[in-house]
Image 1 (spheres, one colour):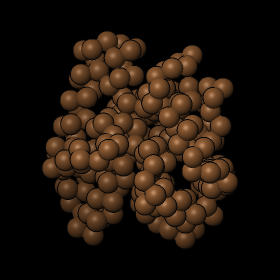
Image 2 (cartoon, rainbow, N blue to C red):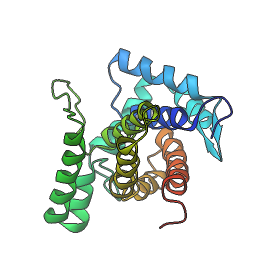
Image 3 (cartoon, helix red, strand yellow):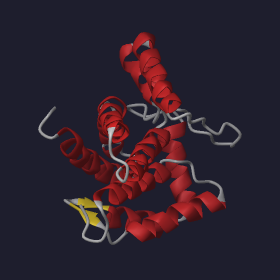
Image 4 (cartoon, one colour):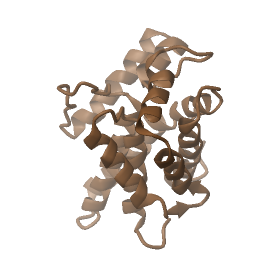
Length: 214
C-alpha cells in the first residue's frame, strides 16, 4: 500500500489517525498528538486516499474552529440528519432497540475477547461503539496481526477472521453511510474533507479484507 511501510503498519497508522480525528481533542496534549500524527502521515498516499488533504484542512484551521464544528455536528443532535457518531444510537433511531442492543453487545464481546476495558475517567470518554473507539479497535487488531505474523499459526488466522468480521459488522456496516451524511451536511467543512477521505479508505479496506465480496 505504501512504498515506505509494510501493509500492516500503514493500515494501523491510517486507522489510528482517523480514530484520533473523531476524538474530541479539547485537551492540548490530545490536540497536539492528533496534529503530530497528521503531519507524520501527510506525505503518504494510497490508491486515491489523500491523508495530505485532511492534514492541510485540519492544520490550517484553528483549534477552536475544529472543536466548534465537532460540537455542532456530533454533539448537539440537531440537523437534517442526526450525525451522532455512535453505532447503537444510530441503529436505535433507524431499526429500534433490539438491533441496537444486539450490536452494542457484540462490540463488547469483541473487546472482551482481548480483555480490553475503556477508560471511563476522562471528561470525554467515547462510548464503546463510538466511531473513534471502533476505528481504534481496528488499529489494535492490525497491530496484533503484525505481532502475530512472526509466530503464524491459528492465532494469526483468528486475528484475520476477527478483522474481517469486525470490519464487516461494525465498520463497513454503518460508518460509510454515516460519513456520507456528514459530507452532505451543509454545516460540515473540516469534517466534510475528513469524511470524504474516510469513505474512500473504508472502500479500499473492503476490497482488501473482503475481495470482491459485498
